[in-house]
Image 1 (tube, rainbow, N blue to C red):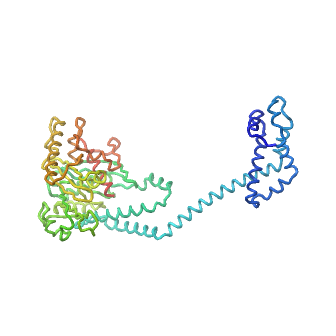
Image 2: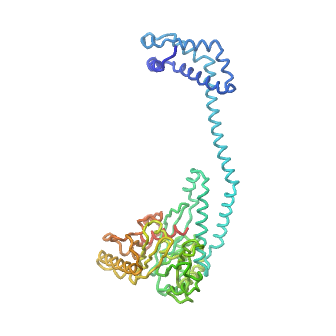
Image 3: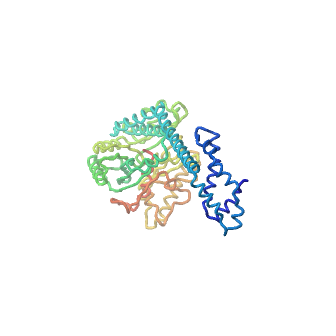
Length: 503
């Protein structure tokens, strides 16, 4: 007679006895018989148990046990059932079965865990032994050596050094992405570990003002700004196009560095876009990529002896119709800054213009053929027009935010953007180019034009809307936050984005 599970469940619920134990016995019997068929060595005791008279007697009593009578008459509880349960529980065979089941389960769990551990150890050994892993370690060591040996800025090759270091960093990052052999737990701990944070100082010069930022950047390029100070710079220290007094400039910079506790932090120097001119050539149009090339010299706004040029290929060097971007700057002006930085004698990340790095980041976010970016300053507006990995040219518009400041901020800002829009249309029409749907805006002048009464007009978009960087800026929580401007929010966002793109 087979026991119906439904009747058994009703019986357990009504009698509330320990009959569940003999149900466990039946389950154990089936379990052990199945395992015994698979591997007799695992359960040699089953023979003795199955052959014992006591075991057979228990099984027969279970099979012949009448559940119907117990369910029909709950008031007359059978003594046979109680004695049967008691006999089952006290049976050595029952106890042996249960103990063997527990041992078997524990053994299986341990075997599974040991197999997983062995697999992990084997994987790590294989990764460490591979030539790719060893090659990656050698690249990391080489990168560290190059970085440490070039911390101090060299006057003659300061821009080229920056570009070469940036390429090494990019190459290393791409190599690291190929070898994701770290588990998620270790990466999670690493992300939240403050020992991987790097303290960095950022110096930004524009409109005769120096802005100093003290910040921390973590392994995921998340930035936390800890302190800000803004200092006006008189004309006898930095003129319109020349550093007049490097000693005084070095003293001002050192005072701010000490104030923000940046004495041992690497420094990134960002100069306003108006100190640079950008032009792009087809590689096939140049006889040589050099400052001495006549076509290169013809696009410089400065005399050849006072011109510093940085070259950047926008495509593969083997492609003859690729583009070469040239960035022109005044050699005397750059020399004044490099002399100042040598006096400071701190590790230098680089000296870079503000707008080009932002422009390259924008071209990765937009899908239009042409991208337009304007960098608004107090007396001049720098206009950048170009595309991704193609031509990029800069233009100087002879007006800035200061010309449009009045008692009516809303009308003043609207007049500025109307004039800027018309200037962009004229330049692009002359080049047979179509204006994009949005013109991107950045710069110190943007802080002066935007306020609670005025938002950007249609067709203009603040670069902050694209979220090029992940940073936190909370002036109320900073111990040091001293400004002479009403707002520097736009400049903070620009500097955070530039730093993210440089490191």
